[in-house]
Amino acid sequence: MALNKNVIIAIAVVAVIAIAAVAAFALLNGGGSNDSAEEGARVGNTISQSDFPDSDSRLWVYGNANEDDRIDSEDVTALESMIKGTLPKTQLADANADGTVDSKDVDHLKKMISADSSTKMNVYYIDNYFKVAKVSWPVKTIATSYCSGLYTAEATGLTPKLVAVDDTIATYWAKLNSYAAKARSFGSTETPNYEILIESKVDVYIPGYCDSKADVESPGKLNPAGIDVMYMNTCDNSGVDIPNEYIDRSIVMFGYLLQGDMKLTYEYLGWHDKALNAAKEAASKIKETDKGALIMSRNAPSYIDTGTYSLTGKGNTNMIHADWAGCYVIADHSSWLPLNYNSLKTENILTILKETKDSGHSIVYWIDNEHDGLRGQRDLDVTVASWAKELQTSVTENHYLGMAREAGNSPLYVIEMLFYLNVMHPGLLSLDFEEEFEYFIDHFTLEKEKYRNEMDIDNFFKDYGTL
Image (spheres, rainbow, N blue to C red):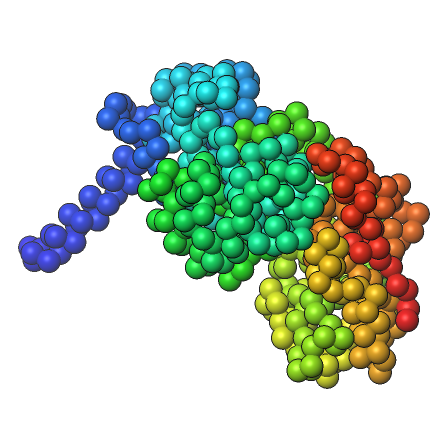
């Protein structure tokens, strides 16, 4: 039977698409030759989950051919074997991000490894939107925002490169670091003053957290001025629905891509891994029936007069950490808490607590997550007491905790897990959250005395018991 013209066209289109797909696969895997491929051709491409680098890898930088946490001579050896065909190619083997794994990648990788403070080149990576992005070396100046940006810069030795910070760092955290104190303020992450960033001669701008509006417009405003925008955040996202619990990955990439102090960065990673692994090991020993039921509020009756409160929900970063620490996360079991942040009346909250008791958890750990800490906008002593009064008719026995919001979305986040375990299961874990808090200050801050004088542990983590 003869095919009509439309069917023939359709078949032709399908064939072209199929050939293109095969060609793209062959290109990335070194099939054939593509000498015309340009360095950085993949920038802007989204990496699908099926093509992610090794899940245990935290340095998602192109050139990290063996996909561990370092870029070194072992990657050169691995990459050469991949080109010869004796090792399977990895996502990160395409060092120059041109779409082909070949000898050009070896040259690019060797240049990355030998780069010094004057080497001019582009380095490619996968950002927190899972897009291929680039940063131009050398990086001499940076701008960042929010507490997470400052604490991460501290843990990676990057504060000497700070020339611009947001209003929150300038107002609340600049007193911790002389470089942050001298930096210009460019406004907020949501509405940055691009002229100030350009005037400050910033090489790379790293938002402290994702913002759906600013993240879209920032590259268009800053790239023409030669400023790279790097989305490697260690904080909750604002209106952006992407996974955000890869704090350790972001910190290591922050240090590497911005040419920070990698010795310090790896020292932080070792401390982080020790704490995280200890917390998870301890949590694995907790029987399901013995898990502490946890719920988290983000504001309090002491300053909210509408009777509607914000509670964290399923998939929130803090709730992920609580799960890792062996908590029974109420948000994961309640239809009232499906969103990152949920607005609820007191009667709704009391219903959640009743449902929790009906499920077998008569004791609930209520943690109020406030802007206390260095920000000091709220006083945990006051806010937690107001919750105890608001929930006095609860059918559950409520054990009250307090945490500064800046602690759970920064390099300090592992202490959050130690805090839960220390309070709910005393003696199960050998690490003490207060001692590890001091360890962070002693090892991962530049001007330690400023931190010791300003950071009171009771403003960051506090156990109030049953009030």
